[in-house]
Image (tube, rainbow, N blue to C red):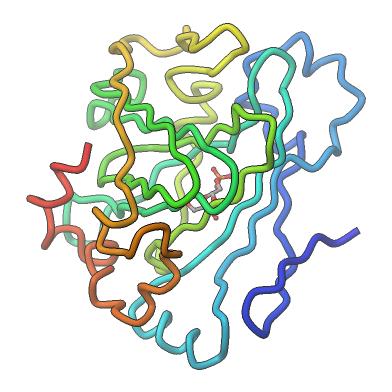
Length: 246
Ligand SMILES: O=P(O)(O)OC[C@H]1O[C@](O)(CO)[C@@H](O)[C@@H]1O
């Protein structure tokens, strides 16, 4: 059965990640091999949302995309449910990769961000974990791959603004069977397939007002001042701001 979201005057059908899409990145292999729920829905992605056709025109003219992702609670065996995880490619003609900004709409999220040595995907230079609650904003700076974990008992709903002109890069995370750490019932466990992993830095999210939104305001409202999101499409022009967010 289709899962839909009504947003403004439009109804959007979800792209669904199933358990079998997570095969390469699940920590608990024993559980995965035995489960008979391989077709279970894991999370729902409502992509390229706009409340109206005129909003969509504004969003497209700024090369942006607004998505909502819904992640029900649950376990992957001993590991908390999560997204597959990916990196973003570099802006053409630069050595800066595209950033992304998330806001928690409902529930709570644990964002794991990791930066690797260029050309050495199994040598991790930095791992930041950010726990975010409703209204909090999390900026994924250039150079960081990211996984979102729902380690709560409630459904997580989060929004993101991102440049619409690229495709995410999945191979490095898949080749290494996941990110540098897995969040298990007992806490974070290092992924043994990485050669070097630093300790986790725990970082606080930006509150919505620090991000220039009224307290708890939904960041969709940035559509009315979309130039403020230019750091997502031309991050090379905003490096002093972006390199300070973590
Ligand atoms: O692509 P993954 O790793 O499954 O993660 C899904 C998330 O990534 C996004 O594509 C944005 O980066 C969202 O639509 C969604 O929240």
